[in-house]
Amino acid sequence: MNRIEIKNLNIIFPLRNKTIHAVKDVTFSIKAGQILGIVGESGAGKSTIGNAIIGLLEPPGELISGDITLDGVKINKNNIKSLRGSKIGMIFQDPMTSLNPLLTIGEQLIETTKRHREFTIKESREYAIQLLNRVGINKPINRMNEYPHQFSGGMRQRVVIALALCGNPSLIIADEPTTALDVSIQSQILKLLQSLCHKEKISILLITHNMGVISEICDSVAVMRYGEFLETGDTYNILVNPEKDYSKNLISSVPRIDKKLDRISVPGYKLQNFNSKIFSNISTNNDSNISSEILMLKNVVMQFHKSNFNKKNSTLAVNDVSFSIKKGEIMGLVGESGSGKTTIAKIITNIHIPTSGQIYLFGKNILKINNYEKKSIKKYIQMIFQDPYSSLNPRMKIKHIISEPIKFHNPRIKNNETEFIINELLARVELNNDCLERYPHEFSGGQRQRISIARALATNPKLLICDEPTSSLDVSIQAQILNLLKDLQNEFNLSILFISHDLPVIRQMCDRVGVMYQGKLIEIDKNDHIFNMPKQSYTKSLINQIPDTKHFYNSYKI
Image 1: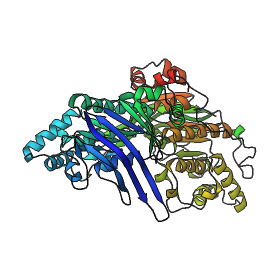
Image 2: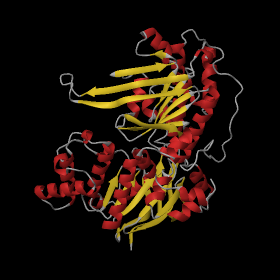
Image 3: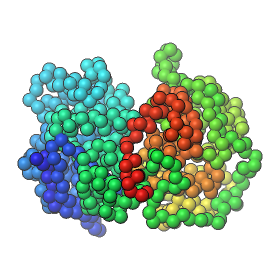
Image 4: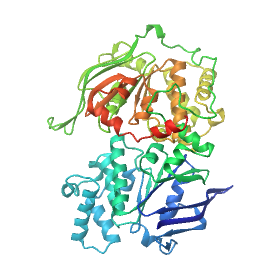
């Protein structure tokens, strides 16, 4: 029996100058206890379908035709409020935006349960404890009194799943539920969703751009582009024998875990060759004066104290970490959330001062040099962040965003020299000059990340720190950004510290890999050794929890 049926769904967004047809004649169904995955790039219309089902289309979005039927009942404007939460649950990408920071977890669960079920406060509390237990949260009675900020990212997502289950729904819409989670937490959440499907016959509509997630838990998959379903069918058949070129391109863009390639396949992309030297007109450090080891950490410790008055109550974020990065090398750092990866990046960039240890940049101990020397060194270290939108000033045009670091570190530079550098940098990141007069909000996520890369390169850095630079991007855009970083690394002879929880990305990008666990660097080795012959059991468990995509590597030539 079909749990939900959608026939000829059409959704438009009327704008001032044009009308966007966001969803075009989409038809599909999901049986009880099954998972349908919708995969495609940003802007394909995936989330719009989910929002239409649950009645959360934002103005000026309008459902102009089509039928949505749940358990034999046609959904319309009159009954959607009674169905939302009780028959249809929703899991969003960012759990912090779904949870009220001013209410305890228990208060939010009790409130939602009372809203959708005829329970007393006592019964609602008991049911909320049961839900927390069902989604795998230990000591649920104690945790009922805690606030969202006191939970980790994975635990917050479990709470959101519990909220979605409060009304005992027959359908759950999961919109990118694991995008921001590391591989071990992602595996736990996927297993939880799968068990809910099988044990309680809940149907799930899974919206994602992660082909590995689709491969891991979906019974069927629909490939979506420009508001249309290009092809639908059994997950294995779609992944192994796709009919449409677009589906083949999506699959070919997935970073492989079984072996390292020179470049990730991006159909239609041509490698560009540039003859001009961007920074020939301004003074830069002579590479011959820089030691072969760009960065060296020795026995670095970082301790965070919860109170200035009670030093015993502290968190050991980084525990005796030592490693080095050579000139022109890409070093990867992997590990779960909270393992200390980003803290190390902040220590290197001097945002945090370590409790103890030594840090050498270009042969100089940055903990013992004066402020003038620090300023001269900082221009050669740049950072690319996970969310490009929050790292770009929304009030500045792109030309000012890129020119600001150039002028700051080269105050005597002429305007025509600055313009030359900006134009060359835009060409390197494959953007046109017409974007110079635009603001960050006018660009897509992938384009904003390209702008962030151009800004990072504006000071002619020697060390680039990439902190989850592609985790929020579609698989095809991710492939383009990763290839771009490889090309730029070769052209500028960059050293890169690449921080990620995405092991396939680390596999394709890095020469060496370090594995972090609870603040310690437990293993560091060459790329092939880490992925083919890991020494530590924790490293083995991380690799084993990667969604299995080997079958379509072997069956479909990519």
